[in-house]
Length: 333
Image 1 (cartoon, rainbow, N blue to C red):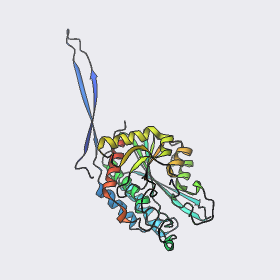
Image 2: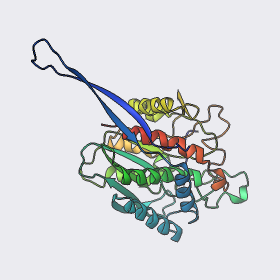
Image 3: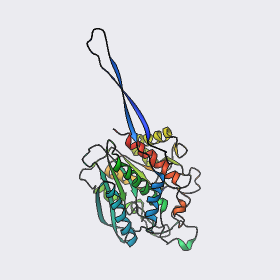
Image 4: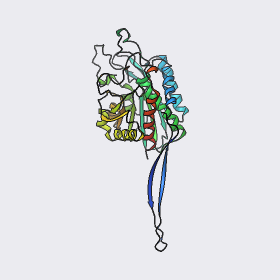
């Protein structure tokens, strides 16, 4: 995309103390009681998330209009359904900047669809049709596996779907796998694609949500959340539209001891799915995406290269991001 540029041994127990006082008319006796409410957060499995990433990569590049894309989409929908989600497949013919019509598919898994209190979690599941930033010019028209750029965010959300299927949080959750995110302008093409050439599935969903009048408290987008030693800064567009959600997530990361990943400082701006969710759907949405403050590379050293394969995935990173987001969701009231 043209963008700017662990496991826990057991369940985490987070305790919220609620004080209730009541008096009984027994002479001068006054009874005060304190009730403790326990929020039990299931343990996020980094190994399970890693396997979900690998399952996607094993299909090969998930480029729209290919058999691999169709097969992986069927797999993702079936996994959401297996974990108890109500699944909606949103099919659309979307025109790429090349003029190609993409047979796109947004895949939505809804938990507790009747619950009006909702949070939405996003990741894109397609992979880049070209390794446009590969150091070898001969490979720059080669489709990539997109282990980190695409599959990592989906892998984290599939593991979260597994947990939600076993233990429902207090709110409804929609997990949305967005398509045709990574079909934006190739830098070697003499075409003025603009930012609208990216995130086609997100633009379609934002204008045509899977439920009429859909709304959520907020959204969290995961993109490239599986690399080796990334740093996640508070992304600029996220700060503009959903600063409070950014702070909620980064505060949780600090509380859980993951502030070596989640740097509580502003980073750069990314043209990503959350831009269109914010501007079109008006749902305050943040993007958890790597930022290199040195400017040495964009996002990940293997971004949009043929080396974005399983060697590019670190289970510890999947575990850190998954644990933080899981804790945020389960602490919603």
